[in-house]
Length: 89
Image 1 (cartoon, rainbow, N blue to C red):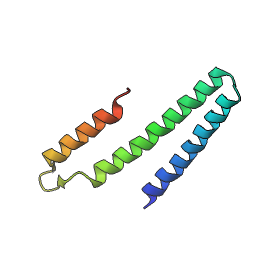
Image 2: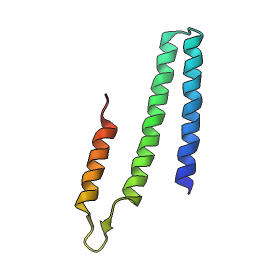
Image 3: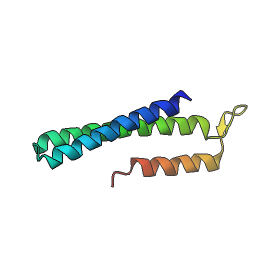
C-alpha cells in the first residue's frame, strides 16, 4: 500500500523536524527561526492529515454506486471527523 508507506515516511520527517525544534529550543536559538520551523511542522501535519482524510473518504465510506449515494451514518461520521480535524484548539 503506497499511501500507507508515504504517510509513514512523511511522519518520520515530521518527527525529525520536531526533534530539530527541541534542539533549537535547548540551544536557545532565535525565536523567529523556531516559529518558522513550527509553522513548517504544522503545514506538514496538515498535509498528512489531508492524505489520511482522503484515504478515509475513498476506503471507509459506503457508496451505493448505482444511486451514487453515501450511507447517511458514514456521512455523519465523516462530518464529525472533519469538524474535529479542523478544530484549531
